[in-house]
Length: 334
Image (cartoon, rainbow, N blue to C red):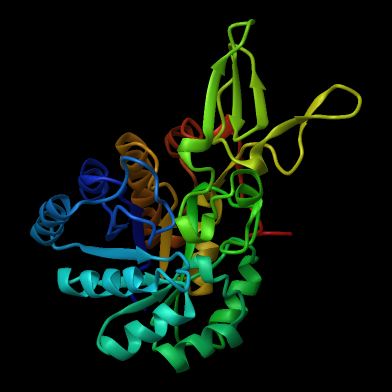
């Protein structure tokens, strides 16, 4: 069985280089438009940046995947077709797709392309995964963050499609590709425009106590005092005022996924790749998370029975997390 890979985020050329140099086997990136699910201003790659990026990846003998994982509308689908053609033309090692129509186009137009199913498709059982393989020839699926390790192991036993799981970074508590919270508040759909809480709708305003008020559209998401760290401004991570006047997180406390304690269980379950969330994060975050995960996976393969999480790994990860809180998500229990 081949070793599990590390797939790192690349929101720009600096992060891409940081990921590769820190030990990523592949980076995943997007074009600077609405065809990818991290379509933020100033993020993703122009044509010139892509040319430099591809050369760097090839010089390092690594791989790059292109995410085209949002959902086109009736009058926009041609842009997604063109994005697929563009990714193939660049020589992408994989194209990460979610929409059925775009999958069909890619499979019909480019039968030799390596197609991966995005977590945005929310395929969480082997029947659906095998359906995507039979009809579109997908070779890998990125699982949504809703399954236990036991469920992943059972799933892998019933499919020969490679399985990729999220390992570090933000934890989406909703079923990916099915969340409309941001759409209700801003009118801009995450699933079509590619940005959860688009930055043009986010406002940061200083408060009288030296803190900060964070709003999305007309909705106040959080009131921070001067000592608090700001979570990513999404509806699901908002801290709202209760009827009694107190504030509380309605959906979840700001926390991040950290699978370092269960790396052995995931590898032994048959996982093919570990994915780091965070194309919108800094190159320092990308470098540090890739480096930690590289050390952890290499440590496991060097001596599986002696694997343990080192303090420096934990310190490096927790220091980057939202609210400095870590979680195993659904991997051990729901």
